[in-house]
Length: 146
Image 1 (tube, one colour):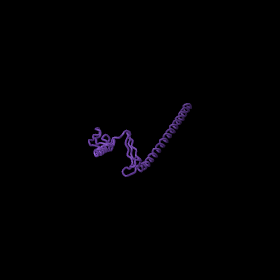
Image 2 (cartoon, one colour):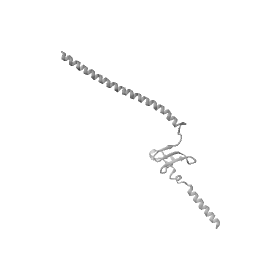
Image 3 (cartoon, helix red, strand yellow):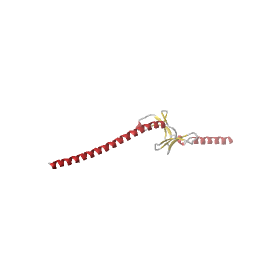
Image 4 (cartoon, one colour):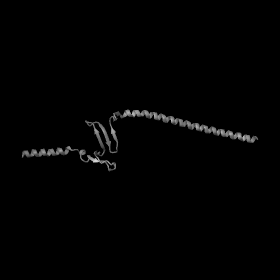
């Protein structure tokens, strides 16, 4: 009888531990092999991780730092340095900032030249109008003087 109780208790403990050891997010509903959408035309099977209600995150071993988070709206949050082809992205962005500075200077120069061209055009049109007024006065004086 005592052996039955110990055996029953051990079986109950094993069943309980095995049922709790499987995480809800590791179930077949969240991690599985499946094909992509039919519109993509890819017939291979992909390891698919479905997100929870808010998204998913990758945390450090101690659980204190979030390395990557992906929300359900498509936002990707990276907490740390990002490398692309063994170059730190910040360094690549700094290189492109100098190019953006040059582009900005070129746009400013073109804008200033355009404004100067407009001012020159205005001055020339005003000068032409004054010449026409003087020409008309001269013609009127010649006609009256004859």
